[in-house]
Length: 154
Image (tube, rainbow, N blue to C red; front, side, top):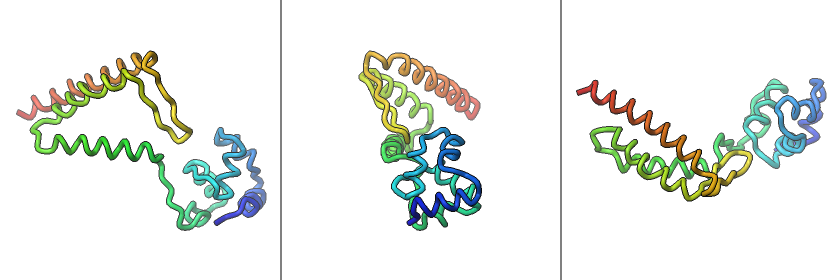
């Protein structure tokens, strides 16, 4: 596991400070410091440090599993995969899109959270309607496109 002094010293040898790297990435110095010391993981920060040191992330943090998605995103993907499996054997993909269109906007109207690498952002029910309309619009476009594809295939 690297130490903050080891990474910092190697960066300084290249003429780069943690502050300069933080400015370059648009993050706080503490974020760069925590990643450099191995206390935190950030794909972007780790990649930038490795790039500046002309090495790889694996060389700097050996054996460390790095995920581009946070746990909530992985769980959401597993849920979506489960929902998609419900439609295996269905003739048309448009059926799956209709299902999503019927189910998700109504659930979103009660409020929801957006999970990011920087933390969760909660949308209350009274703030959800613009997001719901956007989801309905996107899914509606996907449905129309898919139905057109299916019509052409007949």
